[in-house]
Length: 284
Ligand SMILES: Cc1cc2nc3c(=O)[nH]c(=O)nc-3n(C[C@H](O)[C@H](O)[C@H](O)COP(=O)(O)OP(=O)(O)OC[C@H]3O[C@@H](n4cnc5c(N)ncnc54)[C@H](O)[C@@H]3O)c2cc1C
Image (cartoon, rainbow, N blue to C red; front, side, top):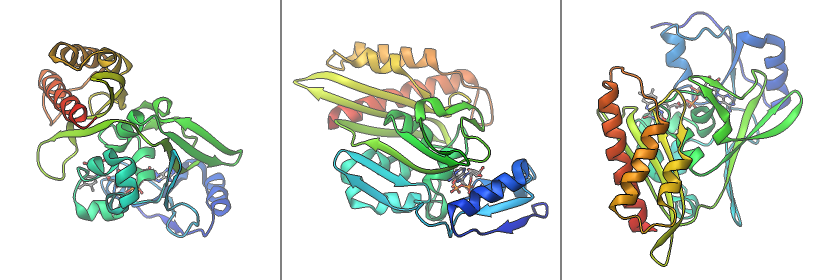
């Protein structure tokens, strides 16, 4: 459980980070909280000859709520999300989801940027970001660009981020309506067997907008437009919920692993989504 030898870099600013990434190419990786990367290095599943610690880089932290827009800096930890009263009021689904990530030790270190940039299908934040239709802000040698969370994930550990780009923040509109983040796991602190992020808007007893994303049920997070569409225009009655679950099941593609066979995962996904829809609707 000892990682291969590596050189440790601790730049003070983003130009310093990008210069190191350009100099060392494939051999360099940035480190945020280190709670996915360091275990991978110890297990020798990742070899990183040049480790670039982002801790001292200015401008990567902070949570800002400016009118209708929320910005969360990449180095914001899950614990900071849980403790931020303004964010918990403006986007309560963020706190509900963060509380279900790992355990307090991991949440004190693990960052939003690391969670979404990692590309692990088991991470909880990517699906949540897709549910909220977040944008990821990336900076690299060519400058800054923004990518929709719904377009970012390509395969397990493969994202739209170029090797020399760093994710600096995520932004999204203050969500409307009711929310729920529902997660089934084998034990406290575990990754999801299945998880669902749901935001629903209710007007006069009718659902007028719905966004649904699922976690750890494919090699990327799955935002299911069809599942949301199945609820819009309905009173979210049993038939509509069944249609939404059916639509979601057509969009996911789980694989058998130590969390269970495919049929079990599909069953759990349906139960979890049904619960999430019910809770979000009751809060809408
Ligand atoms: C016991 C345990 C249980 C866990 N359970 C869960 C769970 O239930 N749900 C969950 O979501 N996560 C879970 N995690 C993972 C945890 O949330 C990690 O902290 C998170 O996945 C990565 O965040 P980090 O800041 O630690 O990133 P790091 O480990 O530092 O980095 C992860 C990857 O992202 C890249 N990266 C980091 N920051 C940036 C950036 N700003 N720009 C570009 N690339 C970047 C790194 O190069 C690396 O490839 C668990 C971890 C442990 C150890």
